[in-house]
Image 1 (cartoon, one colour):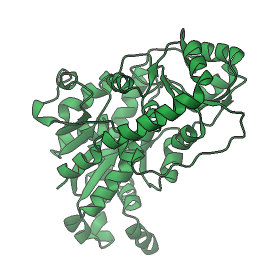
Image 2 (image 1 turned 60 degrees about the horizontal axis):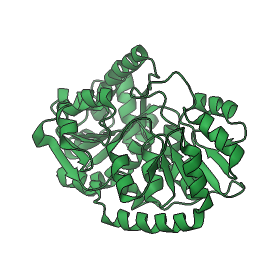
Image 3 (image 1 turned 30 degrees about the horizontal axis):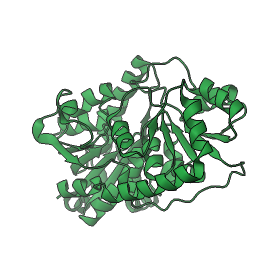
Length: 382
């Protein structure tokens, strides 16, 4: 047992998990870290998606620079464990995604909230930071902890209603009207705007290395919609765009690379797009964007990333998004539907060299002009 405690002392995150699981009354005293709690408060970040992990990587650097310990929690959910390894992060995995069923979502959230509370109840947390985590925000509010939410997704209304009214500070792009948050219950004093988008945090810092898939050029990378999200109303596991993509493959010359979100989506897409290379959902997205010539996205984050990396980008998100409109107005992407996808893709492929050069320069200038939201997070953490 002594050897176990010595090892735990080297890895505080593992110690936190053990103390919660075993319900030790005085775990800090048992391993001689009483001073640790008194002298080293924590910043707690709860990451629920790949984007959250990318933000967490740099919030951790802010925390360490300001003299805090950093506690990172996440959940068992498809690509999260693999991306954590790529980013050299060691989160505590707590709970799981409830899937598309509302009852299962609710049950998973309640269970996860209680498990998270058991982990954090015995440590000194100074700030809670997350990207619209219902569980972390609820705990922060319930314990009176300053809670910082970064959010660019008022369209995810169910999650927003569970987090926005309870947050201390909400950091959001000025592309999103303030009223979009106020009508969801945000206190007017809580909103902090910046000019840009969240992806700037990592795109200004990451070194991105393309992969060689041995495919014939041009390569079109497709990222389907998040069919398990509460804001996507669908009964399919694949994508509403698969018929349009299949038709485009018959008339246009390109290799189709697909990055699904879940294992179940991969199986469905392999069946519906037999001539495409459907990757494992745990592949790292930025390197795939760098490897491709054109990007088609039915989601948000990877579409914004592709646009700011200078790839000719088509956005097929099934709803209207403020960020998409802003990037479209700048000229970084174009919106498509299943009815006009083939025509717009054909035009890009027919003028690929010229369009790629133009998009690359426009993206470079835009990225330079955008404000870095990490600076705002750093200014709040004192």
